[in-house]
Amino acid sequence: MDQETVAYASRLQAPDTLKEAMIYSLEAGGKRIRPLLLFATLHAFGREQAAGLATACALEMIHTYSLIHDDLPSMDNDDLRRGKPTNHKVFGEAMAILAGDGLLTYAFQVIAEDAHPLVTARMKLRLLSELAKAAGPEGMVAGQVADMEGERRQLSLAELEAVHVRKTGRLLEFAVLAGAILAEASDEQTEKLLIFARNLGLAFQIRDDILDVEGTEEEIGKPVGSDISNEKSTYVSLLGLEESKAVLQQLTAQAKEAVASLGLQDEFLLAICDVVANRKS
Amino acid sequence: MDQETVAYASRLQAPDTLKEAMIYSLEAGGKRIRPLLLFATLHAFGREQAAGLATACALEMIHTYSLIHDDLPSMDNDDLRRGKPTNHKVFGEAMAILAGDGLLTYAFQVIAEDAHPLVTARMKLRLLSELAKAAGPEGMVAGQVADMEGERRQLSLAELEAVHVRKTGRLLEFAVLAGAILAEASDEQTEKLLIFARNLGLAFQIRDDILDVEGTEEEIGKPVGSDISNEKSTYVSLLGLEESKAVLQQLTAQAKEAVASLGLQDEFLLAICDVVANRKS
Image 1 (tube, one colour):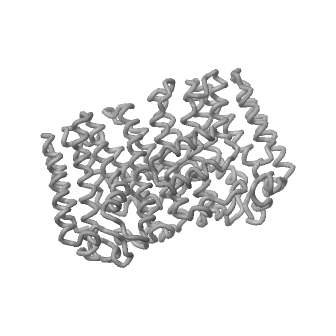
Image 2 (cartoon, chains in turn cyan, red):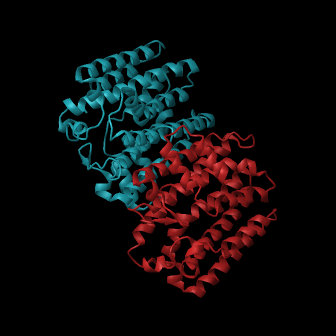
Image 3 (cartoon, chains in turn blue, orange):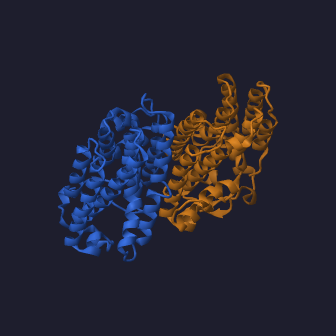
């Protein structure tokens, strides 16, 4: 999966520095939770993973672009990401912006040109439209704006949730939705899968907030307690650590329940719930 | 056309500041040369303009995003664009980056969701793929990188041309190609139209360089002679003013010739050549 995404970028007839900057961040590792969700959804329907490969690569490109832009000095101004210097620290700010722009644009090309025989024109258009909605000004970009605007004040739980649903939730939901589109899931099945994804997305974020308090710098690849020192509203700051853990368990259970009710080959989807709830990084 | 593009952005369920920032730059005026090219190409084939409306709006969104990002402090650091403060001067750097990201992403959604009955799924996928190629890491983004990297040294004429072909040429070519796709032009017709577009794109850039020397600040909306004071390689600095004007005439003639050989309803395409060659801003 990592290799496939990098292979797409390596193939480009683009200036060397630009390709280097794009590939640097694509190779920075990470949990690959979005591609995993897509493949697990295809598996649930007994469909082959290969049909989701191009979309999974596009999804990682979009996720990676969002991290590069979020880390910029004028945004979160982060020097480290997963223990490595952030893109602009290595390539400079202008190149980091362009590497992000390049990854974002290329992602749409990769889906539009997907040549897998099981991926129809209609599926591709739906994938492109849903990906743009999840990543664009009604989705992830809106979430980043809301996050920035909420930084200087205490958020309510509902406001915090609204930020996360768009900033990280929509792209996680797209991963599952993409699997459903490619597997030709019924509307009813898709609805249940989206309930699964929404609960999982929030669980993912709560686990992040818990790790900021309980993790080690080595494990999470950035200083522990950075949310506290930045006075950021988090689930832990609003609910306390114990209650956050209880909500995490509850969301994980709801996610599993939504999936289990479908009677599919759901073992990978269920396993991802446990990975998200218990991850150390 | 301007109203249509702004209407698309106004419809978004997005944070107010983000929408404001996107619309601010969409409304900043400009020559709308790309939509004009698209509509003129449709007209040449006797097709209705309405079939190109969504694509034309998407094209202006991509063009506008590129201006917002190019003007950023870490890129060209421009305070004025068409006589108005640049996006980051009004909304701050972070919001300008996000407004650009939002416009870029939304452009793909607008084409993917185009509901005009004459626009088939196959056309939409080709439009999406070609737009991403023209705007992405092999096209406009590559051109911006090459432009940045060439800033601190004297370029040869071939290098300068290579920068412009990608930085502005590819998106102008896409405008014509989009018209050809939507009008179901033959491969041979499309080839001729692309020769037209390539010559026109270079003519456009030479006219820009001439205006930087001969224009007035009032007309061009930025200080005259900024290329000279920035020691930028331009057609005028490499060829001199008279030779630049001669090349401009030659390119315009070649563009017209390529189109005229097709025997279409080409009056608007020919008129655009004259507008580009003689424009004052």
